[in-house]
Length: 361
Image (cartoon, rainbow, N blue to C red):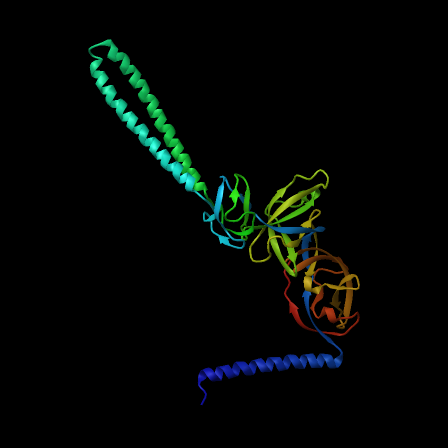
């Protein structure tokens, strides 16, 4: 005997088989009559204008050439490909001489303290004698002046100690941010000089897209605007973080920076960016899937009243998401083929099996 759960599963399987059988029957019927099964969507209003398709590059906003601030022998350097967290060491310099210097600094401070204590005792003795004769007063002035000099000497010694401690801290070259070591100029055992490049650290999650555009584009795009970016079939919208309206004297080009979330493309990868190249205007848009590119032409198919495919040449414009602006002999609300268009020919009989709900661009 089958329990209730088994019976429910059998019903679900049976319903799926019936759906597949009905779909196959529709396809067979259409094939028998010479019809092509298609799905349609409406032509909607769009706000757009002419666009420029420009090359861009994925970059990291945190890409640093790390150098040493000290001269010394390297005892350890991070490997290429190693992931380093912020403040973790990227390289370590031999600190033996600095440790010796620190011991000497401490000794200098202790000597100054001993001299100060001796002078303070002498001053107390001379203060008692000064009450009796002028000679003691003169010696007292000298000892008080010497005490002030010894106090300053102690402060200088303390500054030397603090500098040595700072150099000891700098002997461990820490990462300024989370990142990955992508190249290394020196290895353990080599002598590094102050300012010499050691390695390159890149944050692979702090990404942007850099694109150079003609100066005239600055009139039509601003920070916060969204533009379409694509590469290898992947299309997404990116926000403009910054427009740098300063052009190169020879190229007359400026730079734009777009915010890019990690997980789509890699640093250094080329992308294509669509930027507005004119004032916005009200026009028409269709789904991107409705466009047919064949023999150097771009067109869509509509369906006539007697269910025949009608070819309509169009000129594509700016895209946004799944839709794209077009210019052609179409009207608002016309239906265009979005599924099956690639198999159609002018005047071919079609059978509409679905109508996609369209959203305005």
